[in-house]
Amino acid sequence: MSQVKIYGLRGSLHSITRAMSDVIHSCVVDALQYPQDKRAHRFFPLEPQDFFYPSGRTERYTIIEISMFEGRSVEAKKALIRLLFERFASVLGIGLQDFEVTIFETPKHNWGFRELPGDEHTLNYKVDV
Image (cartoon, rainbow, N blue to C red; front, side, top):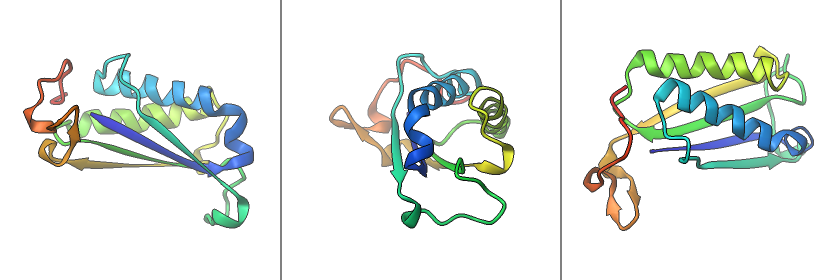
């Protein structure tokens, strides 16, 4: 299970929301062997007065937070981060200084979906990649 939150300036995210979601999903599928049909992305477009970011960044500055079950290897998570940086630059034209990602992992039992705690579900994909 994973859920992705994307934060950025409204003016910058507006025209690339679908393309960005496609890039993020392709990275999750490739790095974590995630099913194609599982996508949970939420965009948080912010007005300039609501989004403060470090100097040296542009109006394309984007922050992604990925929440997922614990269990992925360090190598898989690093592969995901590397793919995101690579594809944000090559596909979306977002520079390396304008992108940050954080992965939050929680135990399956801390998730609830389809009426059950996460650790009581049988998933159709592997978590231990």
